[in-house]
Length: 159
Image (cartoon, rainbow, N blue to C red):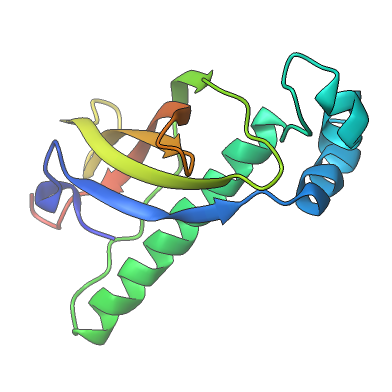
């Protein structure tokens, strides 16, 4: 992952895709969001969703997993090139979480992350705060998910 100074507003990266199978939807729902339309095909079909629907929290969790995996991949690649790797800090929060359309069994959602803002931290010297919007689009080109989140990003020493 990059240092604060190296990241530009507007930078966009594809972070990966996740296939929402009926089994993965039911497994996640049974553990974290046991509503009938996430657990049973017939209940999902008879709901407003029109089919077995993934929990919005499942969609967000899949996105987060892909975001972390992509960050780890970028860090490995930078280390292999002999570059110093920036170790990012935690997130101070998110806003504008939107589940725009149902994600149904069989859907593949592709996630894209775009930097929308950055600023130096006023309370933590040596750190910046990066804000990015991550969105998910299904195989039909419909946007199904969006979130705007921030993270602490280290500045290079002496910056």
